Image 1 (cartoon, rainbow, N blue to C red):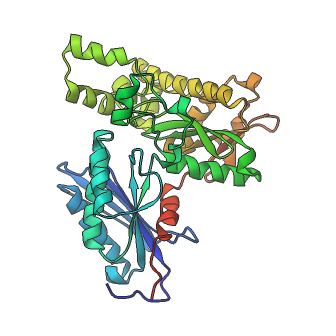
Image 2 (image 1 turned 135 degrees about the vertical axis):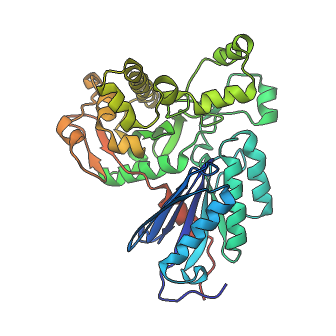
Image 3 (image 1 turned 180 degrees about the horizontal axis):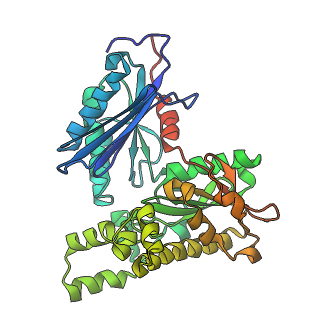
Length: 406
């Protein structure tokens, strides 16, 4: 690869290769500016979609995207539309979001063949995510062989959970042999948001107790004391915890056995049910919150129940984590739902005045973006909305491995 123009800002390409989508972003790690970002979705379906945002506009295209390889080739081709060949864009590193790092991969890691194999082997713990992560890594390494590729792991922030929070009460020998523990996910987001919350409050993170609620199509909660997580809602897989768009969250393990023995569902059918046809979608038929609200407003009782179950689970975790922390300084909402849905924020914290948690309805309902306080002036507990930026966190982790530019 030829050397980029020395006047071109160093850029990191951040890739998030999901089960049926690829998110991508070019980021200047120091400034946080992003000259291009986009999404390829509905991979493997008859009508795929590509959306590419860049400094001069937006390109949207539809058409069949048969697999991740074709999708990633499309991503790289679109980056060349910035007006220069890909090798001159100024990419100094590629950061890959990887969902499961297991016990051993818990730091930003320079990717080589051994790391790729390790990520692939961990697919047994993240069958929806790690296989797609591997495909993204393999294609990106083929197309951009002369820059470092760095893996940043969703489980990393929770690697050192206290043993009582990380341990399942099952046979110890089986658990140790197979690495069965609570790993936690969305760690890059929880860590980023916790530090941004401390900056917003003008306090050192070491002195804060925080409950962070990452609410999106996937959802998780964490309890963070002094910058270190002491508990989180997701476990061995991203299925445990809060109700999500298509995932059940917490269920009685006996329910799974009952569905197998009585209903006759096999392992694959159970996996499909709990991961793709449960949560909001299972209860109401939709997993998009805008569609859910429309159904609620139209008087749909199933949609109303789905919403109430979703909020009930959040309140359950907020209460548990507040108690576990011995009191909380701030509750922080992030993720697509957490950042943009005022009803969820209000209902999740309504009636908690005795715990010192009071949301200001005017602030909460204001059509604002960015970092903001939504708690009332007299609230003992701060309530914040902090947009997450996992891509920037990944870019900053990846650039540390970049070779000096000549």
